[in-house]
Length: 293
Length: 313
Image (cartoon, rainbow over all chains, first blue to last red):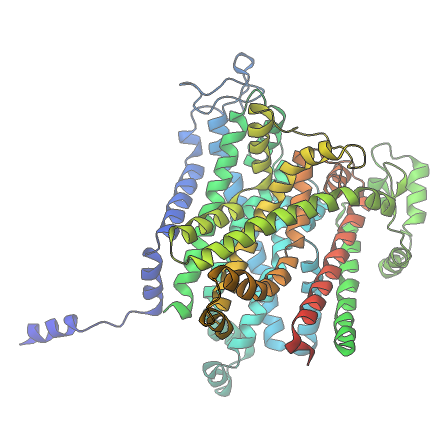
C-alpha cells in the first residue's frame, strides 16, 4: 500500500524549479552547448599548459627560425624560433584570465553602484547616471587604450583598464533592472515587514536580477577577450616575451609574406573562444528570458 | 520641436562636463610627478619647469581643471610634446583620412547588413535565415585586426590584387586611394554589418506583420514592391538610429584597422601618441571622440524625431 502510494507520487508530474527549467532549455540549444564545450576545452588547455605544451614557449632557437608546420613543430615556429603551438597553449591563460578578471572588476563595481542608483533614486541616481553617460560617450576600446596608456603597459593594467571601461554597461543594466524590480510586491512586502534596505537589496532584489546580469557578463567576457587581444596587439597588454594571442599577431603581421602560420593559429584561437562565449551568452539569454517560457 | 531640442541639449551639457572631468582625471593616473613624466626621458629641467607652469601643477586640482577646461573651450586641447604642435591641429589633419575610411565602412556595412537582414527576415527559418545568422555571429566574433591580416595574406600576398599598406591621398590618385582603402573599409564594416543585420532582421519581422503590409499585399502589389517600398522603408528608421550607436565601434575599430594597414588616420594618431608618451594627444583624441559621439547621437535622435511624425505631435 505504502509503495503504491510512493509510486503514485513519483509518477505525478513534478514541478521543476525555474533554474532547472532554464538549464533544460539551455542544454537543448546546440550552439550554446558547442560554445560551452569549446570554453571547457580552452580552460583545460590553459590549466594544463605546463603538461601539454610540447616545447618551452619562451625558448628561442636560431636553428629553427620561422619553420613551417612540421612533425616537431605542429604549428610552425616564430621569428626567433619559438614553438607557435606552445605559445598558443600558454597564450590561452592570458586571454581567459583577462576575460574573467576584467568582467569580475566590472561586475563588482557596476552591480553595487547600479543598485545604489536604482534603489536610492533622486540625486545619487542623477549623479551616477551622468557619470555613466559620460563614460559611455567614450568608445569602449578608446577609453581602455587611454586608461592602459596612463596606467602603463602590462597585462594587469590592461585588465583594470578593460574592467573599468566595461563598468558603465553593468551600472546602467543593474539600475534599470532594480528600477523595475523594486516596485514588485515581494519587495514591497519585504519592506513592509521592516527589512533594512541593504538586506532588501541583497536578499530580495539581487537574486531576482541575477539572470540578465549573467547573460550580459558572458557576452562581456567575449568583448573583454577581444579587447585584451587588441591592447596586446597594440603593445599595451601582456608584455614580451610572455605569450599572448594579441601580441603574437602583432609580430606575425610583419612576417605575413613568408611565415603566414604565425598569424593563423593565434587569430583562430581568439575567434573560437570569442565565438563560444557569444554562443553561450545568446543561449543563456534565450534560456533565461521569461518570454521564451 | 523647439522644446524638445532645448531639453535634449540640456541633457548633454552635464554629460560633457563629466566627460571632461574624466579625461582630465586620466592625468592623475600617471605615477609620480606629471611634469617629470611628461617631459620624457631627457627630463630637461627647462621643459619640466615649462610644463609645471603650463599645466599649473602648483595649483590645487580643481583650479587646474578649470584652467584646462577653459583652454578646451577656446579650442586649446594642449600641445603635442613630441611634434611641438597643437593637438587640435593634429586631430584635424588626420580626421579626413579616418572619415573617408569610416564612410566607406558604413556603406559596406549597410549593403551587407541590411541585405542580409532583409533576406533573413523574409526567408525566416530557412537556410538563408540560418546562413545570415551565422555570418552575423562571425562578424561579431572575429577580431578585426586578425581579419585584416588574413585579408592581406589572401589579397596582397597570395593573389597580389591589392596593396597591403601604403595610403595615397584621394586628391593624388583616386584609384590607388580606393585600392588601399577597400580592404580596411571592409574589415571595419564587417563587425558593424553584423549588428545592422540583427537590427534589420528584427525590425523587418515586426514590420512584415503590420496591417499596412497586409493591405499592400491585398491590393495585389508585387512582393518585391511590398518588401522594398512598404516594409523596408519603415524598418530602416530604427535601424539607422540604432546604427548611429555603432559610431563608437567604428572609431574603436579604426584604431586597430589603421594600425594593421598603416593608414595615417585618427586611430594611428592615438596609438603613436601612446607609444611616444604624448599624453596631451591621447587626452585630446579621447575628448574629441567623446564629443563627436555625443553630437552624432544627438543628430540621430533629432533625425528620428523628424522622420517619426508621431513624436512631433
